Structures are given as structure tokens and as C-alpha cells.
Length: 57
Image 1 (cartoon, rainbow, N blue to C red):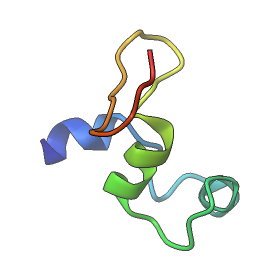
Image 2: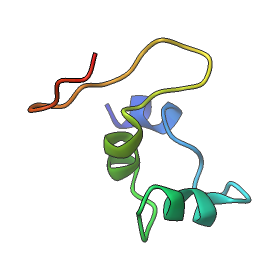
Image 3: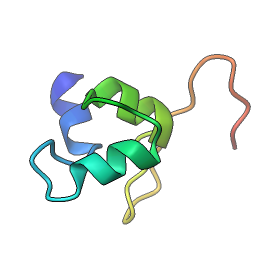
């Protein structure tokens, strides 16, 4: 799971990582927190995660 999460988030070393974190309302880099905010959506695919209690479609 950890390996998969790595591919569903931007890298911690990305130039604008701090701005991206701020736009997500996060203070620090945490893969799971980023996936919770973004649902693991990537620009070029149709895979995303729905968490318990959500009704996203």
C-alpha cells in the first residue's frame, strides 16, 4: 500500500511542494493526508479512492 501511495501523490522534493501542501490545508508532508484530500486522483487516469462515510461518485 505504501508503494502505491507513493505514486498517487506529488514528491516531497517537488519545487512547489509547500504551496501544494498549503492549498490542501496541510502543514507538513504526509502521503496519507494528501491522498485523503485528493482522493488519490491523478490527472491522466480514472482511479480514485472513496473513504468510508463519503458519497462521492
